[in-house]
Length: 270
Image 1 (spheres, rainbow, N blue to C red):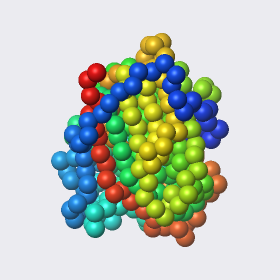
Image 2 (cartoon, helix red, strand yellow):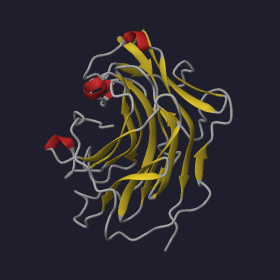
Image 3 (tube, rainbow, N blue to C red):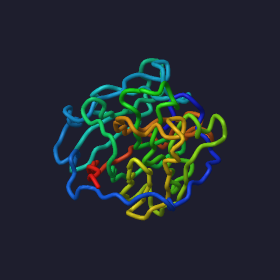
Image 4 (cartoon, rainbow, N blue to C red):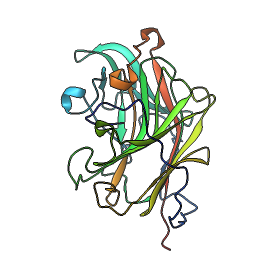
């Protein structure tokens, strides 16, 4: 979910398989996870919040205000995290929602990342499970990279996107590397969205089926800034230059992204 630049609608596919990448293994049990097996607010030991609107320095002309520890917008019950976008006047905007971040509570260099989620219905929604750099060593977006584990816009109900962004590969210069796959019942059933991140490749999976691979070409951080710490984000935006490109169905709100669990498995040493 791009920070500063308009998202690309036409996406360049990456090959499903890297031909020369080494094979890596991952731990069998998670080193960091949230099973959402409690009730109330998201676990404060694992999640913080990005609070505010595009005026705070992020966003793609989105229409929501992200709230902090507001149980109307982020809550856990019955084993599920619900991030809810609501049509309501708040801080001068017409919608509220939430953006959870694991920064400084869950920061990772390599690993297997699985988010089991059900994406929302409603034209105008823009749901994402993604990763951003914790330290921005190579500079602002897109120089330090971005990894999109899953993105979904409501006007394309069963289309799921997996993408990475780098200085040399991003939509502002027409070189973005990503893939779209149609997933039956994406809005009515939970699916596993997964990234395997190693020193040699990032691979993307839906329900354990690989659909994406982005290799480390060995050409420096312009192509591969993915040798530094990243953290997780879960959010539901409203409108924006991608989510709102076909308008917004106000009658669809409130609507929610549901997350059954988030699990991170360590990359094992060769």
